[in-house]
Image 1 (cartoon, rainbow, N blue to C red):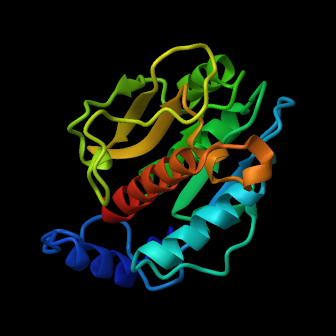
Image 2 (cartoon, rainbow, N blue to C red):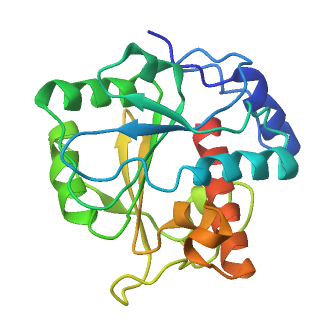
Length: 230
């Protein structure tokens, strides 16, 4: 199974920001399919489907502000148990409340990451505890580690010298970005205490001011660009 991570798109991005592309042939094969974001369906009762306008708006932003060849902006979702998961290079996990993966689903997500896929997990209020529990099923030998502010994900397209921007207030805690590496590659990025993807949703959903929405889109762009570069 080959994950479509879009060789032609990656080359355009890397050239546009001046990155050496000589090492980009390693790992999973890449092709020129248009980019799309898929929302991961999961069991446990959490609302994995909330704010379906988020990815649509994020893809519209990519079309207007980057050279990424983006597919038709619409809401795409995928089940862990479906082979279609390997057709998406970028998967979003979010929602409020409980998340549960079976051992078979955890192994499948681990295989997805090892095959070149990228997971962006965005903490909606109430998601943190079950997500951390379930991530240990996927990566039993790894642990979430906070990324330093000078990590390339904070400078891949826009510059965030202080790390993650704070979009939504949950518990008056600072935003934190955590990662898990597989075979030396960051394959999972977890945004905690900020809720970046809520900032992508239609304005009437959360009444975010324009400056916060702009921060959320710019950070989302950074995460996506970074995922396509690595």
